[in-house]
Image (tube, rainbow, N blue to C red; front, side, top):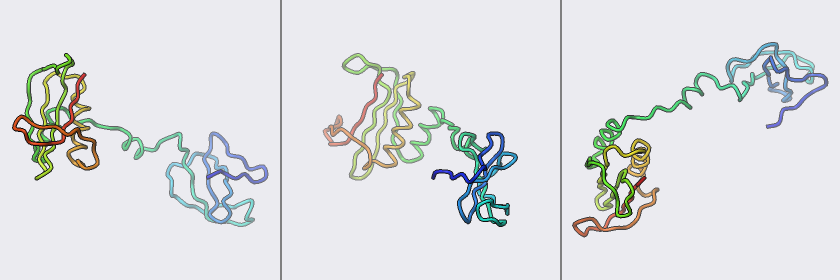
Length: 166
């Protein structure tokens, strides 16, 4: 939404802004608004009367709640594995291995769709395991919204599979 200016009223950098709820005029305030959603009655130069104005918070300065939403805490690898197990996922932890091309394996996941059953293999010491386990958690919670390669497991059963290497 584009801000409208009226007459000589311009937004001051040091101050905040308030939007007139009647005409949409943007009014400069002497100090920054601290919370969005707060309304107050202020004189409006365009309407010519005192009307409700909604405070506008500068989007470049995030408030406390927004900072908390943006701060991301990543679970540790053991906690992610415990979470997958709590969902009924069979998780096998192995030592470091390389694939057929000599690349270090990070993790493998297999999805057996009838009934929904998941097998995850993790390889200890693999760089990027925490990020990979987050992707696997997403695949497990929404298997039909994820991409899978069709493969056969050791017993010949058809399943969806995905592997990560570094």
